[in-house]
Image (tube, rainbow, N blue to C red; front, side):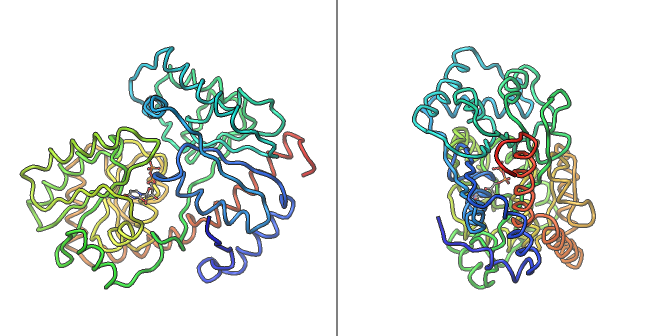
Length: 408
Ligand code: UDP
């Protein structure tokens, strides 16, 4: 883990924010808090833990992070849960349920916990709570789009959630009304000091794009996302074909593998077939923070054509770089893209609307600049990692108080 310190963020967030974090976290100094998720790399959850873990430690908390391991069958099953909870009509049979809970039980035998608070992210490690004597408060942090879950899947998953003291969602409509647990809302956030979000010289950005075969003298449209059906890369391709009728442009679809998402490779291969005969499309499947930064900074428009979206840190990252965003009006995206102010929102399956908005921004540079500037301000005011940390500190204190465990 890197030696990141909160004082490094003073220039961006100001002294008051740093002082408030130190003051508010005082009662939690020395408290052992453990996060459990299912991957160290790829996707928004890992992205946030890479930053919050070292910074919470800088505040004096013993803030840790463990990753649930699985057999090769485990992650295809947990991806099924993910898909079902995002509304897909999939059946998960008893054998698959046994593997799901069995891997959680096995992990509990390998991994002893003596922490003061547990924070469990998403469905993969959710059943862990059933396999430990419950000595501390447990919080379930759900990052996925639960706007229309498959009812059967939700009902099964819910039986584990009922054991938790508290739940945290990104968007109010994800907090299911039939869930009796305490519920809190915490929107995700980005780290402005990470390699992917730091300011980079234009010449360096161009160099990186050229190394990846991207022409820096032509209009660039991009979507940066895991190769996942919910991110609708095929839909992006259809939109691009429409845009090409009006303007000369290139499309970049940049994704990186996540160890807990076994569907990515197949979707990537499918896409490679789909682009046969479509010119000026670059599909790049690799993990590079620098490339993410360069693509998000240099694109004329960033597209996020998700069909479901827990929050969409890729949107936040693009807005932070002052790049206008045209995105689907789903999940957590409308918290970030305010239609006509920080970008444009479209109906996810309305390809014409996407194409029209993109062309409008490309043809009117001053509009793109205005949307980009507003977007950056919106992220500065709402979606930086220091706000996320403060809300977590308050949430952990509130949970300790309400469960009357410990001395808070
Ligand atoms: N990401 C990346 N490389 C890529 C594609 C995505 O590092 O090629 C990162 C992206 O920058 C963001 C995270 O993965 O930080 C994705 O988070 P998001 O909330 O957008 O979606 P999720 O993958 O969690 O559904």
